[in-house]
Structure formats: C-alpha cells, structure tokens
Length: 389
Image (tube, rainbow, N blue to C red):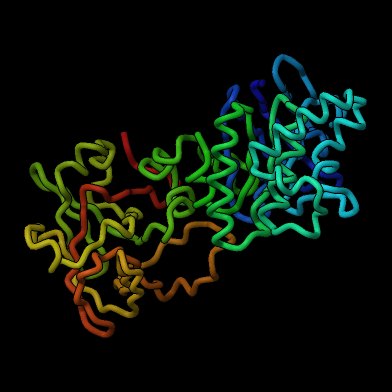
C-alpha cells in the first residue's frame, strides 16, 4: 500500500491546451478517493498522469516514497481498471486474471494461488474456464478487477469502470468494488462523471472543473458545505435549485426575497453564516436542496412566513416520494456545468422539490410550499463562492 501525492501538477499539450492547472492532491494510504467532474474537465488526464500514460508538464508525482515523474508505467507498481474491460477474448478467465503474473515470470504455483484467491473474492471461481464472451458485463468487470487484484499493487487506478453497465448492474457493482477495496485496503483513485457513484463510493471526493480542483472533502461535507456554486449544483441529485435573491436584515432577524415573494430566515441560518451580515440589501445567489422544499399541507407546524406559493408544472411519483416541479419568478443562476442542458436564462427553469408521498398537490395548481430556510445556501454572485464565516 502507498500514499499517492500530486504536488502542483500541470499538463499542457503541444497545441497549448492547459488541461490540468496546479493540481495538488494527497490520496492517503488505503484511501478510496474519487475524482469527479463533467466531461472534459481533466479527471481522466489526471489519472493517466498518475499511471504514467501522460507526461507531466510540471509539478511532482509521488507513489509511496518514490518520485515517479519519469518512471515508466510498468515500474510504478499500480494496476489499472478500464471502462472497456480490456480482456483477451481468446483466453480463459483464469488466464486473463493471471496473464500479468505470467509475463512477470511469477512461479506457476504462486500464480495459481493468487488467481484462485482473487476469483474467490470476486465470486468467479465457477467461471475460471470460461472465455470473456461467455460472461455478462458485470462478470467481465470482475475479471478486470481480478487482474488488478492479483498484481498486489501499491495503488488501484480505475477509469470509469462501470460506464458500460446498465443502471441496475452499476448499483450492484459499485457496492462490490467499494467492499473489495475496503477488504483489501489498497489505495485507490477512481474517476467518474457520475456524482451519485462518487458520493456512494468515496472516502473523499475531489471535484474538478476545467482542469482546476474545486473542492476535496468527504461526500457529506461536499453536500452540506460546498465551496462554490459549481460544487453545490454538481453534487446532489436532483441538483440544487439556484436563484438570484436579495437579503435584508432587521434587528435580530433577516429575510430573503425570491422574485415577488419573501421568506423569513431561520435564526440557525444566520448563526451558521456570520458573513451574511455584510450582504444586507445585496443581491446574492440562494441555493435550496430539493429536500428543503415540502408540501406545506404535510408540514402544518411550519411557520407561515417561510412558505412560497408556486404553480406546479410536473409531478413525478416515485412511490417513496414525489418530485414536484414548480416555477418561481426569480432569475435562475447557472451552475457553470457544461454537461447541464442548455438553458434559456431569460426564462427560469422549474424548481424541484422532494414532497412526501401523501402530498395532494396537482399539476396546474398553485401549491403552498414550505421552505426549510435553516438549510439555505448563499453564494456571492461575483465570486460565486459560498458565504459562510
């Protein structure tokens, strides 16, 4: 096992494109760190630099105690798992898993022991004599994992290994990969564009945009205390609702105006964000998680001055909850996510709330919506940074 360190790493291609900007990350020994971001943000480039498949323009890369900037991939003591499995179709599962050990001239009895141990961990023992073409997508990905496991590397590098699987199998495999990593205790760098995958698998998650590291933290801290508008919107599904608003403070109280409506701020919101005091009368971006909107009829004790009236445009019943889409007459704030659907920012898209399954709101009607203002997020419109301390 080993710690992987990226210290002010840059990647500039020959055409002048600056793909990675001063990336500094420490992946601790035995940690599962997920690198997440939209398409083209540089996350796979960063992983390929760790692997040695991309050269480093500047900065330092260390695996364990070794500086590996100029070390060949085969000598870095890492194992990669790719999204396309990269299995040899003419070889059996057994031979695919043990092929790298055979090339390294590991004794046959040791190869057999390692392959069978990996197969047992991955529940592939009954498939060792089969060819990849006889396996399901999930089984093929397990074979690719097995090939990495038998090498007993200092670190695993995984580049969107589940992207070729169907939705149900992805859920199953992400749980299996996370469990195997915990059992083996191998330092792991995992790249994905799927923030749900990142949140459910990583010990910590690093969010990248346009080659810049935005924030690295535990999944829950990313969700609860995002550094900026991009992280706030990118982490969470459905995405955070973001609107321009105005904050006003009186004696010991505050309110926020969203379009033509005003919400009283909960004391907890003000206490948690003392820097808000400097924004009295100012325009800010306000963020509301979907779970902080609720059908007011299901929250009879909710203060009336913390509710909004909004026309409902769509209801999606999921059994355990109802995703309610409604419109607010306030300017929408773009998240900066290039993967997001292109919006006509002159017309605000629908807000989304998670309503209880017993909600009786109807499409086309105006609903009274309770807002948990103690959980609101606030961002400076110029810097796009979160307003906290």
